[in-house]
Image 1 (cartoon, rainbow, N blue to C red):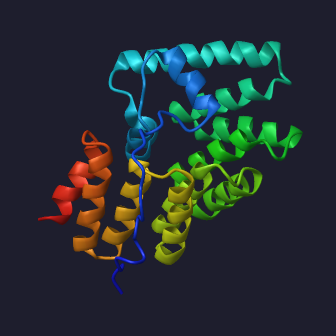
Image 2 (image 1 turned 90 degrees about the horizontal axis):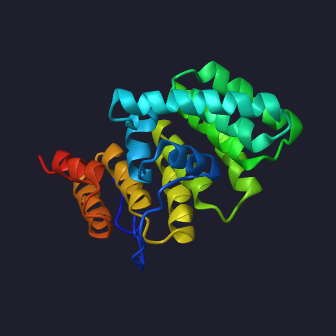
Length: 224
């Protein structure tokens, strides 16, 4: 069954710039790294958005800095979440999970810990675990679109397209005009085999962000 236009209706989407980070954690990391990575790049490339060895050297510096911060202030949850995220950037997922779970042992409703734990599980293909973490994000902060967005991504990877669309439409209502949300809706249409609808949605995403590389590549892919 193909995705219908009504299912994928974006309604009246207000023009809005994409946000440059998901969490306070990411903001801290990117400031220290002295460069900006878009949300779209994050979704498309995960932790592999770094462009050079120099970038990874900066991540190592970030890691060493945060290790010292956590050692000096072990009860500072923000620093510990940032440390877990930095381990994730380096591909050290086991250490990332350990740090993030330590945060949740202290505060089971710490949003950033659940969120970044979900990213780790999503990266590892542990989709049920990722979905659980993003669901907790939605419960903790129901007005934050990122939980719904990542639920949608996870559902798509699970082949649960109806649920994916429902989550993505909720994200779209909370953050209208977000090109990456629109792109992910297009990804659902493409996954269902409806290339015509997907093409229209990718064009919609590009109308909000003409430099959205992944959307442009997806559009070329479905137009072949």
